[in-house]
Length: 113
Length: 112
Image (tube, rainbow over all chains, first blue to last red; front, side, top):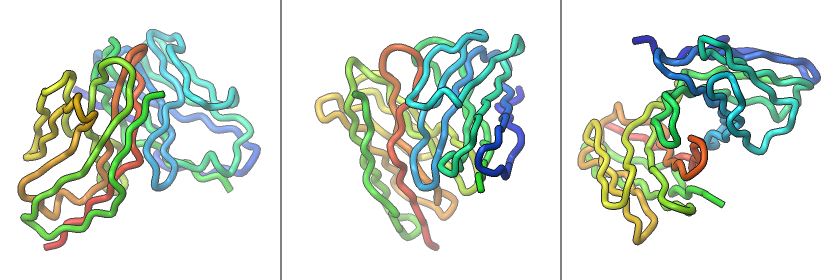
């Protein structure tokens, strides 16, 4: 069974640029959630996708957007990058349902200069 | 709103010492409670969970009991090892869709 994978592992961008992060969910999982973890803090929920539809969103501006594909992999897109967007971005997959355990990928570390 | 509060770190212990990391929560309804661990440079790994009051989650020598009366889910281990050095996150899911709410994390450093 393949776990959750994310790419790239590290990324450096400059302010104002756009970035796309990718996540492959664990086999059999149809739900993907994205979290932002700033240095020294707990992860903050960005949004969740269930069967290709956005299923819920945290307190993040619209320049954070996402997609889920028919194979349940997902992308996180961030436009007009700001310095405060520098963080570890974590993807988690689960098998749906309100309290199913979420399994996390290793994350993508984004640095905005 | 829903929230999780953890004891501040870092927690520094000698090998074989007893560990307690405090976690309290505020939630509507009846949340499920989780402990996740993050080793240096890695993502989060589920350590244990409990889905209803008085449930005890356990894994790898770690335990936590869901205490509804005190809204707590403290993490304990009887004898820590150097390899337990990591950041530990308490989290909850409550109602609606499956959105995890995390505490700020507690860094544990175990010395030989």
